Image (cartoon, rainbow, N blue to C red):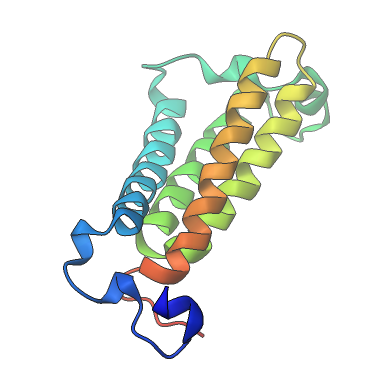
Length: 146
C-alpha cells in the first residue's frame, strides 16, 4: 500500500526474501515455462516424439509457401527454440515475441476446421506470455530498465 501511495517507497518485491513473494513466484513459473516449453516444441518439430506437427499447418498457408510444408515446420522449430532462449535470457522482450508468435499460430489454426480448441488454448497461452512480459518489468533478473 505504501508503494502505491509513495512511488519512491521500496517495492515490496525488493524487500525481504524475494522468493517468498507470490508475485516473484508467479514470475518464476511463467519464466521457466515460457523458456522451456517453446524449446521442447521446437525440438519436437525435428523428432516428432509428441506429434507430427505438419498436420497443424493450414493448407492455405502451405500453398503460399516457397518451400514444402515439412521444411517450413522445421524452420518453425528453429524459431521456437530461439524464442525460448530469448525468454530465458531476456524475458521482458522474449515474452512479447512468444505472444506474437502464438497469435500467428492462432491465425493459422483458425484456417483449419476442427482446430479451434487448440487456437483457444493458444490464445490462453498468449495471455500468459503477455503476463510474463508485464511482470518481467518488475522481476527480470540482471536486466536494466530503460
